View 1 (tube, rainbow, N blue to C red):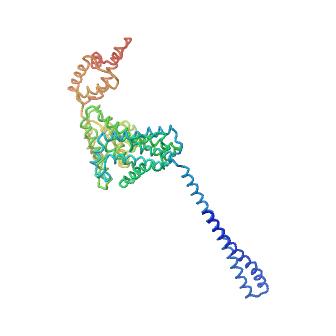
View 2 (tube, rainbow, N blue to C red):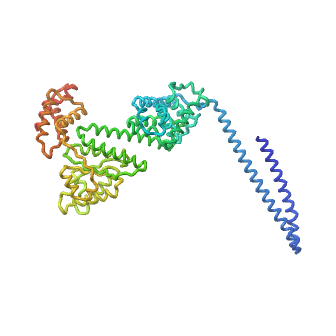
View 3 (cartoon, one colour):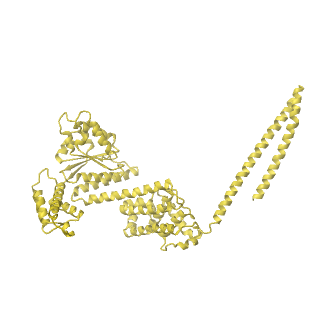
Length: 553
């Protein structure tokens, strides 16, 4: 091939060379004649000779340019042939697909992280995922074996993630081995051994290639090629399983990214986003668990669940191009002090973050003293400063009715006006929760049309019963490894029932019982301090004497 090319090139060069010689000879003959004719004033002969000389010169330039083009084309073809030859030699040098010197340590790391996937699949199958998947109206699930479909989704996610990281996952590379190991773990009961690597050839890879490529192509007919299909589905099925799955993906991809001993910026960014998503889910689960673990507050929990469900459905409607109802994320919390309003406000802030309504989802707590300044012209500045700190989160204003309780010349009205303006200006970055006594908050909201139009969601926090206050006390005891001694619980229960029966508007609810708990620990400390050789039992026991002392103050 190369000899033919050289022969053809030489032949073409010969033709070009002879043409150049002829043109040069003609130019050499007619140029002096033309000059002589012009000097002799033989106009006709001079013109003829000049034309011939010019044409021969132009031909000379044409032959020169043609020769250069032919040489450049020949060089390019030679480079292409050299590249093809090197590629052929590289492929020929890889009789086995994993002749890439995979160390035993790298092999073990990949195998260890890959085994997390079949374990997760088994957990899914045991938890009823397949039955749940059949109930979902997914185009890819119709008429499919759901068990196989789940495996296909997992394989598709792994390949999608590797592609998103721009990591080389071609067969015959270390990253390719990681992909093969994951495919082997998910689809085969037999684990790959290190000494089997040399036997892995193109032929043995075909089943894995077919399944992996088929899964990826099949699923992504219905899905965005950048999305993690199974990870997104698990959000609706089980958030905790979704978190475990994302962590398993992160660990596996971390090993794959380090295969070439260089972790690129793209790989780092993808891994960071993946683990951030897993942490956000963990925080979301913690918030839900915290809300569920709160003593009492059954109506409050139902209201928050209703609000969450409403937001989710409106978001689903928007995704499908349907019209959505106007939504206000601002709330009014009403009820007595100590009923958990601040705690619930922080949980709602986290829920808003999880739902994508607020970017940070932090809580900034304030009251009249934090918004209203002592001197004219300073209130707006002070209020704006607090609001700035709450942007992308929730601003919680306790005893908000006090802003309107100072008369005509009170600066509280300026704080309210500033707040209303910022709520409008930053409506996509700020949620406000106002809190206070039920009656006072109703009067406060009704007194200002701006407040009425922005705050339409009221959540009432009921007072705790005596049984719930006792439960709060016990929660604190369990938290710090304490337990009741003989008769102590009965004494506390009787005291709480009496306190609830005779409570007034200033009754502290949860704060009231937490104060009793703190005093009880102080009295226990005073009782035990003179003793020596204290046992775990003695240090952990709350006696009837401790309860009586703390409740009699």
